[in-house]
Length: 148
Image 1 (cartoon, helix red, strand yellow):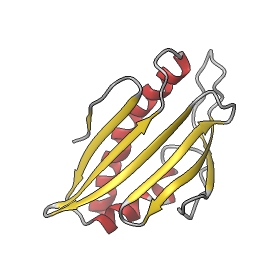
Image 2 (tube, helix red, strand yellow):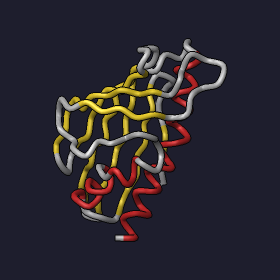
Image 3 (cartoon, helix red, strand yellow):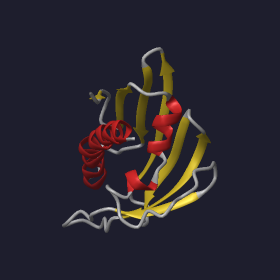
Image 4 (tube, helix red, strand yellow):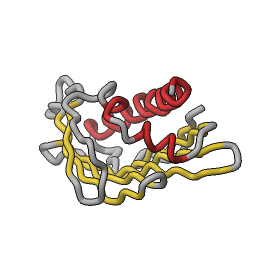
């Protein structure tokens, strides 16, 4: 079960998988997974310093048109996927870390995002999108692990 705790400037989830970290990593970094949630995500390599982009649905009645650019800030296979993600117009920028922690029963995945401005309506909406969307992604990772 995904659990979110924290304040309005952050998002934090924890999810436990009954699989080793390398299996969770293989799903987490698969284009098959992200292609289910975003459009035009064509990244096939995950490495520190590489850039990526994708599209999500725009926020009606705002300046957010749904175009996201990002850069991997730290990638350690089977351990850490960190990136900075920003709207193309620069109005929203957040830092995310997906940390895999092996344990005796599988892998605990910690997902942290920071940099949300609770005084900016578009950033509040983007944070809400993360609060709703990321638990679905975490659950889908579990489903894909069971299918393989």
